[in-house]
Length: 285
Image (cartoon, rainbow, N blue to C red; front, side, top):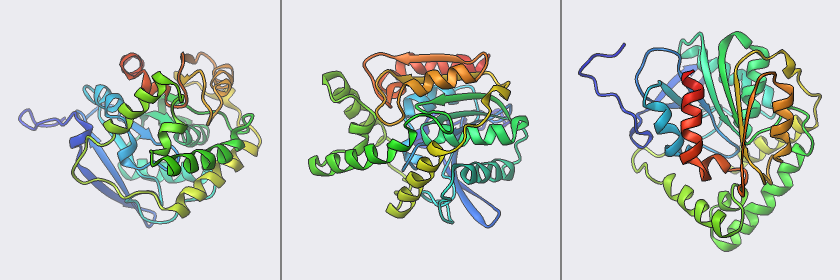
């Protein structure tokens, strides 16, 4: 455990940037919260870097838990190139976690991160104690491969209106959604020092290719999962259709499902005041 007089950082905006090298790749990560116990490792979404985590989700979890966010290979400040399969991304995540010396972790994942998390837990069930899967779907899930078209369409819409693509991709384009979108995008700017490098266009395209492949492949057997699992999404996810959250819930025995009304892919961010306490309680159980 840390020294009594060592200040524990529980604000993601202040989390120190660190690196660890393993298998010829230098992984960039941030950590916060009290050390000791089982860490909660955050698996981020498509095109995202360390700067894409909502502090209103991270901070409440980091109050009592050691939290680690990281850039997988070829993303942000991590070296190497992005793998073109989700399975390989899971292998890299495993390499990173082992490099930090952890035997057991809890996972908090969102979107593509949830796909990577599933592949990791299927391959290394002993590593993961609890699983949080948000805005995501199972390997071979219906219409996952359509994410690519939706993403390009919304990136174009955003470019034309000079907005952040996440405002279109993560939130409904109604009054409630627009307000939630702007608030979310602003929260991501709270960190002012040591910001991460943006993902390259090539890396982003490779990630999209990996998602399409994942969507078209044979489903993994999720009935084998024994980890307590919390699944959450908005009821109108245009990126990873909300029905896939139901699908995951059916496949993973004993899993819990939370669906938020009048919200999209970023439902957990729109409803962070409701969702953060649920995630904290689930991970503390």
